[in-house]
Image (cartoon, rainbow, N blue to C red; front, top):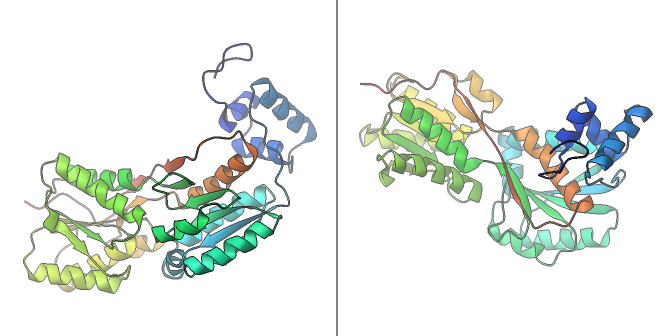
Length: 342
């Protein structure tokens, strides 16, 4: 973006308006949404700047409802860890800022989903849907022909009919694998539960880096039947009894990494002296493990907030094709990772 009289080289963002007016992005968002909590003179200045730079002014959605459909996987995760909880908190905070009412419904199966979608279509007060943690692609079928906008949260649509927002799962796993490779590890076990597309992307990220390093071995993939630490511990113990042919474990989720730590401790394997362990969620409980768990940091609250913004953009912005948005992840290095043993 250039000056007021200059040519705009890309679409103007909220950040651009915030920079021009010398305020925060959240202040700009409130001023353009409904003006809540912002001085009237500042609202006028922000709205004028948005008009001058051709920012697509959103109409207010205040008072409308957004429904969150939580899949069975999301509900199970809610009871076992804080990933879904953190996403929902970010989503709720953003909706409250925009004065949107959030209604949450659990979806048991595809038939239950069809019934809920029919109810939503008949309710004019519900503006759109956020579908949280799609665990079965068959659950996309009932959304075909649905008249209201749907955004997939922590998932994606392989056909690209629906917009989605998720962490950069493939890049995140590649980041974690690359970190372990930098530490000298060449035999990196990948511990996972197959099924969700998001987890398959994590597997692909591990595989990408292992192939690029010339050390890929399909035998290094260990699968478990569920996201339970005890099942992960059983799988790692069984692998150890076959002979320890790895120096690091990258788990597709923190719960599996915690199980790996338990198994290694029970078998007398030093972490990280003999085997390094890394998770993929950076949940708070990881900091209390022995040793504290290194993990990929997932932007959980940011995913929830961005999902609301994406739905609002679809509802009030220019008509655009469906898009897949991924948020970058970071690396939280703690005590469970170290240099590969000689």
